[in-house]
Amino acid sequence: MLSTLKPQPADKILELMALYRDDPRETKVDLGVGIYKNAEGETPVMRAIKAAEKQLWQEETTKKYTALSGDPAFGAAMKSLVLSDSVDHTRVGAIATPGGTGAIRQAFELAKLANPDVTIWTSNPTWPNHVSIIKFMGLKNAEYAYFDEASCTVDFDAMMESLKGVKAGDVVLLHGCCHNPTGANLTLEQFDVVADLIIEKGAMALVDIAYQGFGDGLEEDAAATRLLASKLPEMLVAASCSKNFGIYRERTGCLMAISENAEQTPVTQGTLNFLNRQNYSFPPDHGARLVTMILNDEKLKADWMAELEEVRLGMLGLRTQLADELRRLTNSDRFDFIAKHRGMFSRIGATPEEVLKIREEFGIYMVGDSRMNIAGLNAQTVPLLAEAVAKTCK
Ligand code: PLP
Ligand code: TYF
Image (cartoon, rainbow, N blue to C red):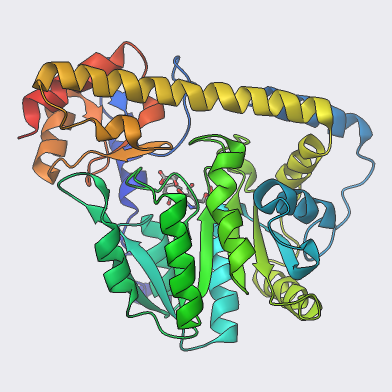
């Protein structure tokens, strides 16, 4: 039977990881996969995670199953972190999931259960796994215009024009902050306009928030999600703890589903639990438990926030340095958008040929669509990248 299998398309980002690994040049620079790296190129375990792990090791007396939803304390902590008081928590169901990806998958599953005919609207471009999972599940996908290639900013008029095609019962997937892959984000005012359109169409918003704390700050980065939660009758939120807690391999995420009223919540929560049971039964607990411990302990939380802020400001500094350097080398403001983009990524508008040239000639690896991971840079490599971009990009 297995001989009937056909090779599946590879993930371009993960493929690039292998190409980078096999490049013998000592001066190579990895701006590919979205993993935070400090100036030494390391991805350390965050201090608060280490402290919580130590405490957990001492205090944990059992590893028996938690609940199908995961520990409800994790759901409660994530509701507070992401939604704060934008919505009455009695309206919000939550499950722990294997990473943000698990939350996205379960959000699609929930939408499919509620409306088998659902179309999921994704930004052009979006994180490739969104589209890949939608198609794998046999769901319909529609793209809305998002990125203006020439200015490397959001083309909001075009976005609203394409969203006119949204129908009742469709799902509109929005990046809560730090858009991946472009780095270009809607303003709060623009999110407000999108919310009105979603209400008018009778559609559902699904917010993917994978970088809270990487853009303008923990609260600021959640502002759009909270605005939508306060306005929309129903909404789904897929949150990832991989980046902001640095626990990528622990697979920690949370799907929150906001119902129209608290009477609906038990059925929504029961359906979320059911979906966990169908897919993997009990979700992973270790990372979720560490996150819960940190968010519920004043000292651990303060230390986590301080370290996250260092990470965020470090990336912002690199953005400014790179934009300044490119301004100097090109004698133009063409790349100023890099300082205005937020999060881990910027898509810089280079052609695939230019991206390849930068990789071959300068050993600098970015994704083929010219997405770069800002955290892959440091003060010494920024000038090398600026030179490569200025020399290569027409
Ligand atoms: N959503 C976006 C936009 C992402 O970039 C990522 C990347 O890692 C995820 C979701 C999911 O992350 P994870 O499954 O590692 O938590
Ligand atoms: O976009 C990124 O680089 C991150 C990490 O299949 C990632 O979101 C990339 C590809 C993938 C899973 C995670």
